[in-house]
Length: 237
Image (cartoon, rainbow, N blue to C red; front, side, top):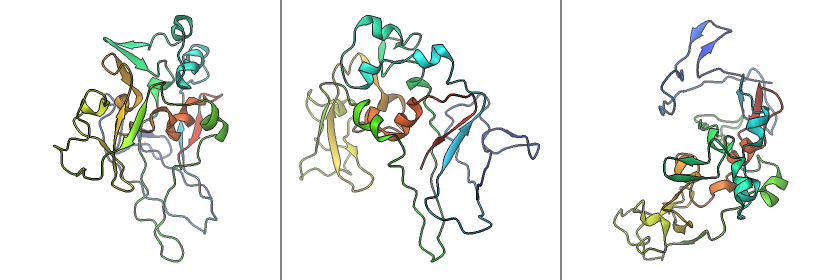
C-alpha cells in the first residue's frame, strides 16, 4: 500500500491549489493537516518519505559544495573550504557547515497525529535509524572543541532565569537558556568554539536541529547523501 499527498503547491492530479503553498512565503511556519486512509492493513515497517521534484541535487556544483572535513568535526584548509562557495559566509558570520547542500536542507516537519493500529494503540513515528549507519559512524561529528553536559540537579529548567548557562564558557548564554530535551525534560548546557563569528547548524535550522545533535541529526545526514535524479524521495521516519 502506498499513500501519497501533495501539500505545498499545485496538485496536478486534482487541478487545485493546496492549503500550504510555498509561493513567496518560504519558512512561513504554516501548519497543514494531511489525512490518510489505508484501504487495507499495512504491515510494519511502515515508512514515511518526503518527495521533491525538479530539485537538482545531482548538479556537479551542488554535489561538490561541501566540506567533508568540517562535517566530520575536523579542521580544514582554505582550499577545502573554497569548495563551499558561494555559501561559505553569510554577512559577517562563517557558516558551519558551509556549502549549498547543508544550507538548502529540507526543513518541513512531519508529526503523526491521531493514528491508531488495529488494536486501538496510538501509532508512533520513529525518526531514528533513517540514515546509513556508516554515515552516522564515520562521516558526521560535532566540531572539535564542542562539549555539553546536563545542568546541575538544582536547576529549574522551566525557569527562564535559571543560571545553568551563566559564564563565558557556555554558548547557550547567548540564548539565555539551556536546551531542554522534550523527551525527558532534562536540560543541557553546551559550548561551541568561535561562536561569535560562526553560525552553526542549530542556529540556521533551530526548529529542527537541536544544539546537542548539530550535524549528527539523522534528518540532516539523510539530506547530505545527495540524490542521483532531480525527482527523489528521502526517508523521514
